[in-house]
Length: 151
Image 1 (cartoon, rainbow, N blue to C red):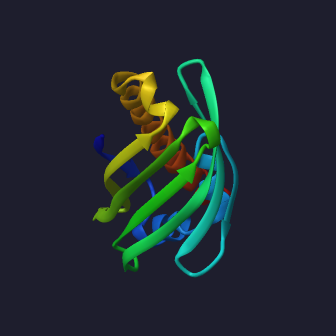
Image 2 (image 1 turned 60 degrees about the horizontal axis):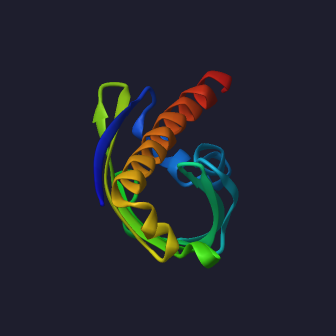
Image 3 (image 1 turned 60 degrees about the vertical axis):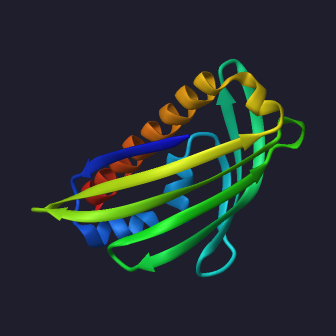
């Protein structure tokens, strides 16, 4: 499954870049995220509860950042194990572009699931994954602009 999108954020690129590297802010924006912690300069560990249709699954895994060009882009690689639910992995290339005083965050991601979760059907998984991605980027934009308003 591949997803492409962009989000206009009412903040400068430096602020958006800092937010993309703030585990506490990201945790607030990732739907179902129970924990997100840095374990090195480019690795995080996470526990996320994902709801697909009427079913919920807990995934525990790691996130690695590669292709890092500060203030411009990076690629996120994530893998999670969901016990009997199966396994999920994916990657997202994130690019920041200036647009006046605002920033355009573009992303291109792909995801893959295996195990019982894959048996739910590709259309349900695709729809749920797209909703989760859209919600994350929308919540991220709101969190960044909300942080700016408080500062």
